Length: 179
Image 1 (cartoon, rainbow, N blue to C red):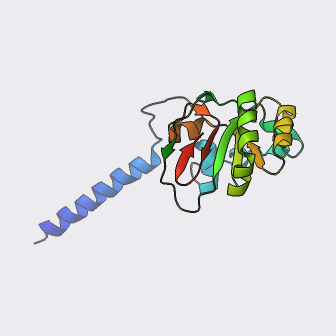
Image 2: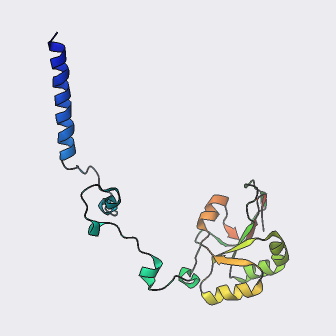
């Protein structure tokens, strides 16, 4: 009768000792793929005995630039997956209420497309994403062509991948993709 509780006690002591040894022993690195060490991030969770001054400090535009970031700081915008060219129209099934948007560049074909469709784009309240623009002057010149439309410099590679696009200009509505 006494043997069963002794075995249980022995098992608990052995397990506790093994767990204690694992907690006290340093971690063993089994792979190092490079990159940034994670240790500075541990300050926030109070782990790894990292001093506060060794913790991660996020850079903000104000600390990097000594001023507020402007739209010109985003330029040039180059979308490597997109170029000017024909787009085959197709139906889409985006969530209802998705704001229509269009992708353009500052090239002559995009300017011509924007001029020809400006009234419809205004009617749809479409937002323009300028996916290829070199300078603030180029962006300003494009905005002069359609002062009643919102035009923002935004890289288009992610959208190109998501929508299976190779070319622009293109209009994307909740139900249709068309040039």
